[in-house]
Image (cartoon, rainbow, N blue to C red; front, side, top):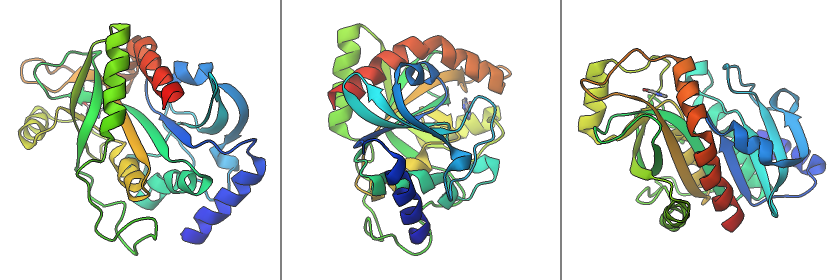
Length: 269
Ligand code: HPA
């Protein structure tokens, strides 16, 4: 695996116009931000050696190098989900490649179902911590030399970046929530009883991504900032039928605000 990561990184290095230290995983609801990037290089995942290929509707798969304002960034447009059938090593492969390329700060975004009764659809939740509910751990197996065998996780989401995001949101008058994101395998959305269980376990929101990538990034010593759009509610009395299309629609509606925060974060770090 390590050889593959190196191989992919050196292949990319030869093509990349610069080596950004900041990267972003453009999850659901950040398409608009992608449009603001002045692209200097874009390569489809299918053309990158050893990269898995993204398949889900609404997630195109390209690796982008470009500028947002004055900032050089590396962006993943589309990510790999465990529910698609990829192994945890595949899901987190791009993060390991990013580390090899010199990325030291990572921004992640996603859509999730709110389990906190004070949340509303369309809320932007800054992720303060997570609960790993995936059935397989991304660090299972031989330890990578990027970090310890038993990594500390007391601050997986960088507090300073959270402080900066709060300041930006306040400046712009954008309401943000804070909360714990629980990552689970999907592809089913939760039953009412599962939402209730996740709430009892300490989740404010539940989704099907992000946790594996964040664990691996943290193991590499990459600073992480994560944000989630609440696209539906897993709260007793407010649960209605949910579909991928609804999730996409709810996320799209908040795109401008989400892009506002992320753009400033990316430029300021
Ligand atoms: N559950 C899991 N994943 C999700 C949800 C949800 O309610 N909404 C968006 N992604």
